[in-house]
Picture 1 (cartoon, rainbow, N blue to C red):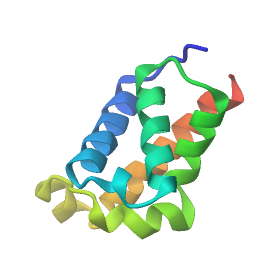
Picture 2: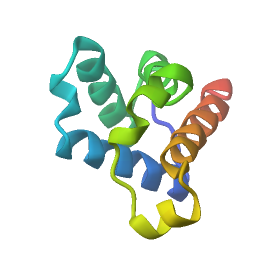
Picture 3: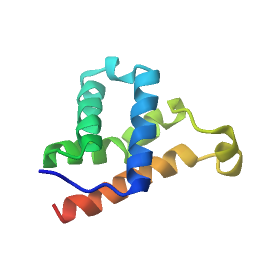
Picture 4: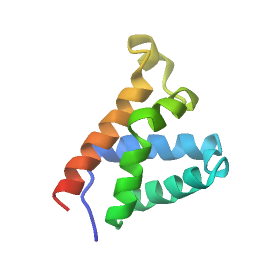
Length: 103
C-alpha cells in the first residue's frame, strides 16, 4: 500500500539508507539485511505494515542506540547537538509510528 512521506521524513530516511550503504551495515547480520530492505521499501513509498514496523523497531531504543555512533552526521550538526544521530533516528520512528497509526 502506498504511503505519503513528508519531505523531512524522506530526507531522514535517505540519510539513514545512504549511511547504511556507505558503512555496508546490511552485511553485518540478518536483522541488518532485513532492516535495509524494509528501509528501502519505506523510502520507495510502496511498502507493507511489516516493513514500517521493522524500520520503527530499528530506529528506536537499544537498537538505535547500538548503531547511532556508526552513522555519519554533518560535523556542524554534531557540534550543535552531540546526540543528533539519535534524535534523527527518534524522529524517523516517531513519524513512521504516526503513519502506521493511520495506515
